[in-house]
Image (cartoon, rainbow, N blue to C red; front, side, top):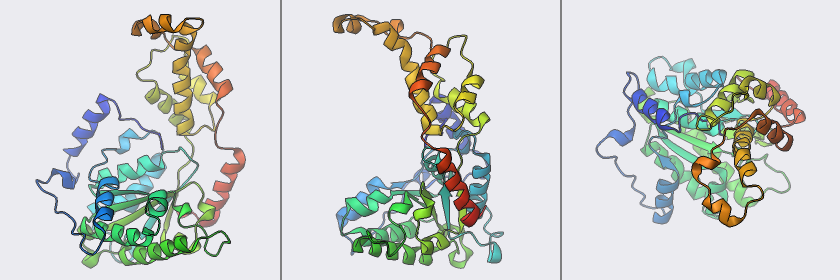
Length: 346
């Protein structure tokens, strides 16, 4: 997910300012000492690698760092953040959802949104990619899932983010399904039933929320789909979002006076956030390519930084767009929309 805004010094200052406002729960990092999970009974290497690779106590990404996607932000805030802030209201029929699934084309910002959720409600953030669960610890995968949820309960309140969940939870019984992946899936379903959004004694500090993302929702096992009760579509950027993404990506680049971002945004309709980043990166290299054309390696090395920093022109964008096309087809979009029409729950 590349719809990111706050990487520069401004973003950092903004993030720090946010942490001081009322209603923001300070992350566990801010305490003098965080209690350490006791991994007795588990392989200590497994526990250490989970602590090292997966646990993040403050992803430091805020809603403001993400361009566009206002509807998705609103839905995620209601599904995940507000139950942490207003536990007395989210009880009974209004109990938090067991799990939330973000669905959409690649490169639309699903991972960024998950990090913003964790930062915003001050939960410990477990960032799990399905490849971690399946390949890295082949044979240990079920144990890893069990350990993951035990650690999540220990470090609660917790958000467990599982990216590319379709690759561990493909439809059961398919011919190419491996026995080990079947066991991992069963363990994941058992653990999700164990934590659910329902809180122990309605205590928000015990909450473990499962947030998942997929580019291939139609490959997800229906038992898992039922447990991911809230399903949210993360679309391609709108016209306004595209202009905003162009601005974010080009904020450190000199632009010639003929560059019209609104016009470029029109031309890149249907491009994902990741595609737009690629367009900006390529266009920003064009001036340098022109400058070094025909020069020897010695002459190139002798060039000063100032000589290479020529403004990017509208022509550079035109040439780039001839090379970089959108990565999501109209047929793919129809497939997402059809799936959401059948299984979505906004």
